[in-house]
Image 1 (spheres, helix red, strand yellow):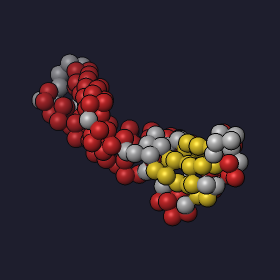
Image 2 (image 1 turned 90 degrees about the vertical axis):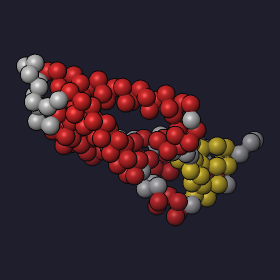
Image 3 (image 1 turned 30 degrees about the horizontal axis):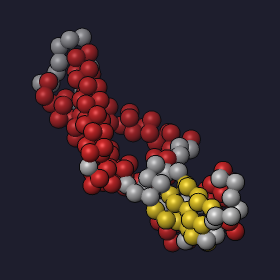
Length: 154
């Protein structure tokens, strides 16, 4: 239970590598992957965790090895949180920026396609904001995957 098959520092290196590579993969997969989980998205996240578990532990099943991996992931996440709160460049790199997806009641088809947004996503956002298209001033896809609608002043 306490005997590790790998040196302690290898768990930290493995945790760092897996964290950074998964962060890159999630950022490349698009904003909607992060913002709104469908059952398919949830399944992918669960399978990702299973797929990388051996990468984290290197086959080690010891309690200490698992705790080192967990502590490494929590520490990296805390460091990323501090870095993104102190640096706009790092925040943009990790979290991304809002994207203008529509203006004056018209949505930009090419931008919507690039952001993997469907017409039903747009209609749902308009309903959530209780805003008909005719009253929409601007629409943004936020970094967290949420669609924000701004109304024309009345």
